[in-house]
Amino acid sequence: MKLFQVDAFTDTPFAGNPAGVCILDELKPDAWMTSVAREMNLSETAFLRQNGSGYDLRWFTPTTEVSLCGHASLASAHIIWQERLVAETQSISFSTKSGFLLARKAADAIEMDFPARSVQSRDGNRDLNRSLGITPSFTGSFAGPKGEIFLLQVGTDREVKGIVPDYHLLRSTSARAVIVTSPSSNPAYDFVSRYFAPAVGIDEDPVTGSAHCYLAPFWSARLGKQRLTGYQASQRTGMVTCTFLGDRVLLAGKAVTVFRAELLV
Image 1 (cartoon, rainbow, N blue to C red):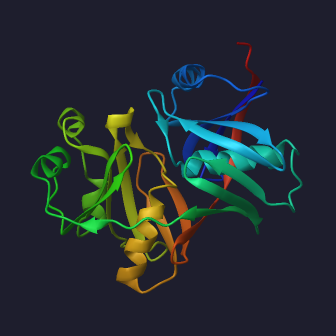
Image 2: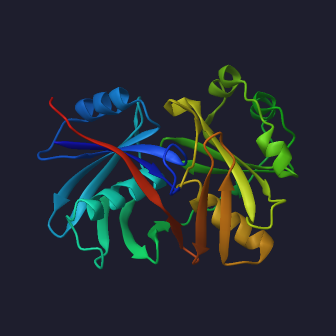
């Protein structure tokens, strides 16, 4: 079986968000895929298996399966076209636990069609705020099947970039993941964000496509724009272009392959 590492949401090696991509030649148990993801030790490893004209796609962190992952989906589409499994003029259909996802080439980037997800305003969470050292102007959440995703807005991108999380305290809260965001002071971007998910084995994710399924509707309503550019202010950094279409979000970015290998077990 072929195994790749791809840096997603960047065109520069060793930037963006690294994802593993494994092309399966047969069905494998969940425990085996978790073990491979743990061996890769990346925020997500994607497992692809051809199914008719499309592909079954699943994503695993080193500790658990997740229902939606943007950067590993981008990496998967990149590998399918790179390996010439599908013509570059042809879209790729993925069957996932979040429904059908579509990827297509758009100019020099890859564009993915994902479900839009809206957060509901709620009271602030004191322990969550303490763990991040912030006082949000807005707290919202999305109740997913495996836990609550929080979105916290602060005033400036300097506050976002300056967060030094207390991961021990953050892990003790009810949050499955936390997105912290603010408007951007750089006119090249509309908003900045960071993403923390120690509950699923990811202290900080470098560039999180799925987070922009929440961020695009959130900032579209506040900025009055349908097309937005997000900058994820992790150490590796990355950029995600978003187009909010009501119940869907188009996420676009680039990717570069770092290595390819043969999996022997």
